[in-house]
Length: 230
Image 1 (tube, one colour):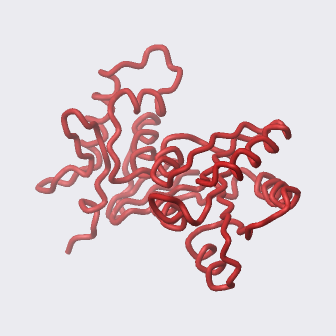
Image 2 (tube, helix red, strand yellow; image 1 turned 90 degrees about the horizontal axis):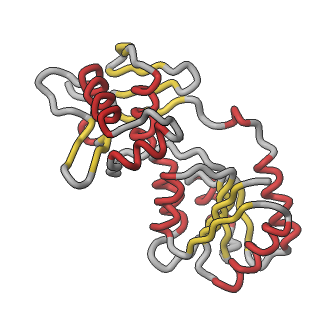
């Protein structure tokens, strides 16, 4: 059983795909617009995503690019009516893992999804880099300007979460939900203290903090503040 995100604005096609995948014991979440699909990819974990190229509010290829730009590693199968090889190459170069042209037989869709789901868990990239900041996910090591920083496990988890979703705000409740998860002792104070310690280790004297906090919006890592400086 896999958890699958389906981003498709054709309601008839989406209903058919969803029904057949659920009959195969998969859990399927369906959204019809790119922005909502991107937000879900940022916030939640999926085993694979099915992404239509042509969406009403934005191009699926732009959803894919933005997701890869923030370090998103969920396998993505693109759906499109464009059979031209140039579109296929653009999809792959933007981070698509596979590409299926409409109309298609559901058996082919299922076969391609199963191939993506069989990939080993360690297939995903093991590091993230934004400007001066480098994060080795596997080794749990963070460097800024080449200098290794000593972070506690929860500090590392918060930083990884924010870097993967750079330039997007997350309030205390969102951080508690996605980083602290089911820990019974988690509190707003725990988030505040963790962010405070993280800032003290990440920030450079005389420069703005890379973790931005705006009242009523929450916290975010700002890419612009991580650009290399002379």
